[in-house]
Image 1 (cartoon, rainbow, N blue to C red):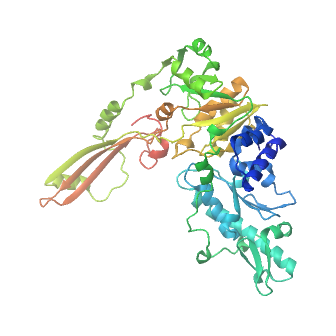
Image 2 (cartoon, rainbow, N blue to C red):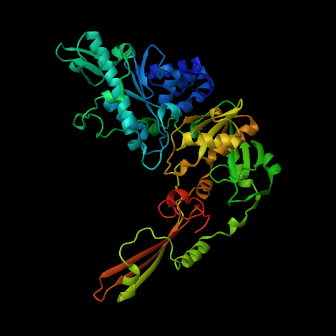
Image 3 (cartoon, rainbow, N blue to C red):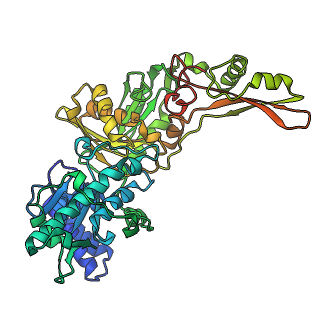
Length: 519
């Protein structure tokens, strides 16, 4: 699970981190000299572990184990309870600032009847066979996962209660779960979940239809304000993002992609770029021409992000911009004004607007437009890719990590089973990271050089190559009677579509009109 591809962190790294933690708990002031002495035990290796973040480091050190470990009660993919009392809940969906890394585990914790302070949240790996669909978009994470996560928590609670009842020789109905313990009020006995973990693991998993869920009136967690689980790491600047990833032999890449659909690279000053300080290589990527996958462009590899960005400033590319270079907002607007003269496809009709407008004492017309809007993520697109042994491993903030696997496999020509992803926190998403073009770029660059590659877009590139909220036009016409009352209203909406039959133009415009194929 760590950067070295092993099952646990190097022992010396773990030892150094434990030493630092002991110093902190003992109240010892950790000056620069002591810090360097302790972290020096690990040499450069300590930085390798940083990408995991707080929960990830603990998980890598063995705190979030597979169900087969005898010290762990793991009734399903979402819950692990250790015999030492620790409760681990896996957050399945990407976190891009919307709070699902906190919200989804809260659903599990509520039905599990455990105090939130007892819970350690760990970002899960990408495994849709175990966790179900893993994506973040459309405000769907909570409603789509509500039932499944309630079932996960309730299943664990039922098995813990059954274990306690069996141990005490009492009916399960006579026991109750609360705050991470099971209680038998009649006898005054109680046991913590940690104490019951081994026994609970021996209980049969109850069928879903037999589960009894908590009543909303009994909720102790849902409905409360709960700080985000990443907040402490965010305010302390701890590693959570792609920019924090450190891998052995990692190179830093930038990618200048073709500015127009259907275009390509004619020439570039590659020799000049390769000769710059810190630059390892520069080369043309042909791509497949699909904006959502791999557009043609020029890749630059360097020993640091600074060297890569400086080389990017010096890059000179002659582009074949194709006919898309003729597209302009003025042209789109003129075309829209022509189209509103046509009838169009009715979306909703009530009454006879044509007759009412013809009979109106006065008509008023207006033409409104709204532009393409960039998502403008706080963190530009970035990820780390490591192509080796015929497969590729990613550290990525994608909003659709599960969906990216097939695309990446197709671009690289490898089986989907050879694509592995680690979820990172994203610095904003808003739908932009539903597309994984930056991952395809990093993957083909890493395959070319045979080393891990951190790809980072500039702010300018992120704005220029966004998948924009589609623009559109509204031609409005209203009719008033002699007393100035509205008697007719028509909105002729013109927008972009990639649907050749133009059946989804309005209702599906936000999803199918990513590119200005036609008005």
